[in-house]
Length: 140
Image 1 (cartoon, rainbow, N blue to C red):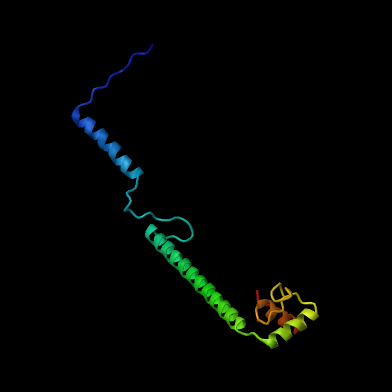
Image 2: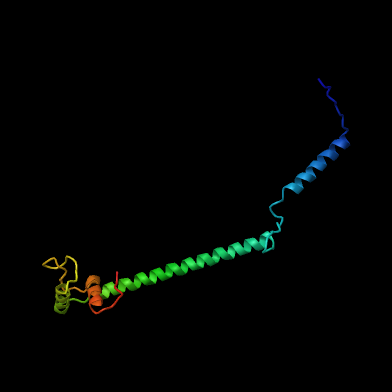
């Protein structure tokens, strides 16, 4: 077995070694407030990076809000169209529905005969009219 060597340090030498260790540790770990240069093609600092990140988040939120507004406008338009067509009813609509049914269009199961002829203009009747007139676009 080897013999242990003991080293005795005076207080000054002990402080010097501890100070060296403290400085090495500071260099290894960055403080949170220190700017970190980014590497890569964009360059800049971490502050620039964070600003770009916040701008991208704001742009995404703006796009999301625009989508939501667009969806609401489409829903409002569809609701208005449904309300407008539901208000149209009477013998003329019954006659149109009967013609559509005779031509083979399926109008649903409403009405006294459960064949869709109920005298009320709804989406099914409107889609039947559009199809009968050769239009390619129907309402859903």
